[in-house]
Length: 205
Image (tube, rainbow, N blue to C red; front, top):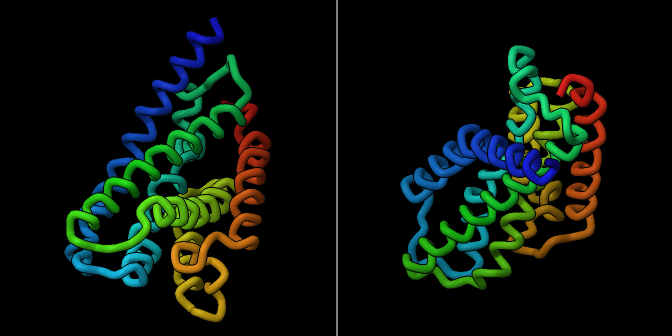
């Protein structure tokens, strides 16, 4: 019975992720070649493109994950009684992580076909870490404020702050590698999201 419940929950959350996160992220990636050069880039320029543009998929992929719970009219539809709510949160985060990784690899494939030269796997992992950091910061703000719009605003402000070299150098992980600060932000925000989401929404989900 639990296996069947888990499969049902996975399927329903996968459909939710595709509708709320994957489509906007795909649209974002489709726009990038029109506003940012993606042909014949060397390693440094490729890292800049991935860091400044592609990593932004973290916003649509992670920030709106708890939007259904923030809409009181959806509570009855999304109630998942067989499992603790934190399991649902982790499941959605994992599904978004897989989706973000697939999109990043797909865009890197496009860049390679456009004769860009860079270490594909290393840059994919680093871009995913950058996207997750942006997304987790916004998702955490969304949980605390119980408002998805606030989450997007905080993520965007975080992104803008990182463009200031003196502030964002430690988080330019595609160019410089994943540092201790970024790892701590990722782990800390992930743990805080799971705990606070259970605290805020667990009784109604």
